[in-house]
Length: 213
Image (cartoon, rainbow, N blue to C red; front, side, top):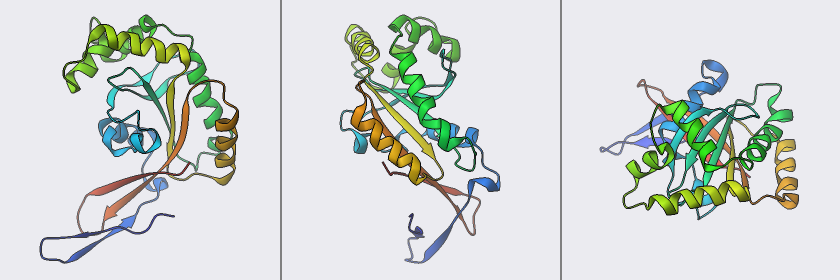
């Protein structure tokens, strides 16, 4: 369970925050955009130290298995796929894990050119769009080495798969543990609970992600 956070101002006075349920006006698109805009809020390196640095790639990236909510890349060419789900959705528990695995299986059939095509389609960037996006965030990235890294990641299924939502159910946790034991691709699968808190006196929110599984 999440403990209730509070803010301490410069005078040592505490200001309280109130947990806001997602069914009070938030939706999956809202959550998706906040996480895409703030990649450092997600505990990637806590899940796998190889994912210390992350660059937003695009949202709603089209695949044969459906659109991926959020795609990120590391400077070394490793892909991160994030599926955002609000757990009041009655289909979430049954489908979300199979859905994100379908995305991974689809990406494993892609070449670098396939990824470049879809990122260009979503962002409008011409040329080597994945490299251009990552090189804006991180200096001195060798283009050839980066393309090779992405190509290897795609070929091996070496991805980080994240399910992020406002509550993780126990039955889903059991499925994740089973998949970690039997998976034949090199992916890492994690579930992250995202709590949203509202300041009781100001029009501002705090988003608190934490790794559960």
